[in-house]
Image 1 (cartoon, rainbow, N blue to C red):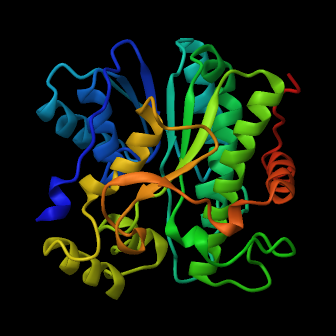
Image 2: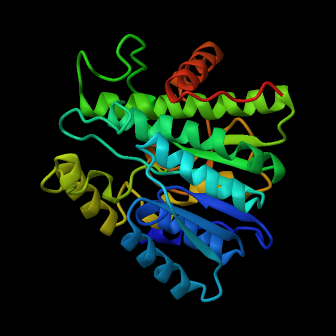
Image 3: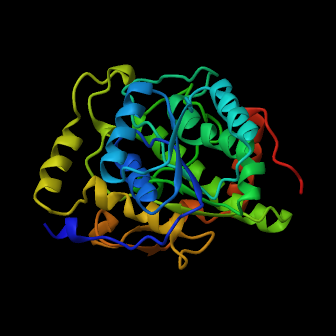
Length: 314
């Protein structure tokens, strides 16, 4: 299939340390596998230890000498994020690559995190904001590149500033789009503030296009007893190399954004095929929802307030 021949070269990452959220399955596992194969020491923050151990075995089946560290992290809990950050700072080693990849998608009914946030906004966006705050000293020490994984869903919908947590009205896809728009705005604002404050890190965005992953699969913890019709169709198309990608090709935009010397800060990378659903990774025009610096500054401030953390002024 043509889509499976799509690939990129990844430079040597010997001596580099990479953190990949959501790296225990799907696109995240493919990202972590490629980073390890390029020589990076990979940290896998995982919510499910058994899945994490299976991911380590999968990565070492490809790269037997891979340096991988499993640590517990549940992005839907600010206490868990803080504990992960404490463990990383106590270790003290610089971080050179952070890929904010983990996420949840479209629970049929509104759910909340341990801290009372709407689940998608709290996990996909706020959990990653808190993570970046907690890891900032190590990111600065490593002159890191931070790549935040958004979605083509960030090209629709908007941020409902009057009802961020979906308390007045909840719709799964609208909430998902909002969470990815917020993460995208945050990632771009992170790059601007890093340059203004001399943090020495760069930040950009990636999106995977469309591929069969667990996001739309049966997830009892999300109230989804069976696979959605969408994921069944996506699997059928992917298996035939039609219109959509595979988990392997869907991992490439984030890998390009996070590792390529040609990938630029403050830019967005995604598949270059029809509808940006599949194809070779390339720079893409920022979605209209991500272009407002005022909205980016606003989501930055609102997010700091919600997670109860502040980025340093310098």
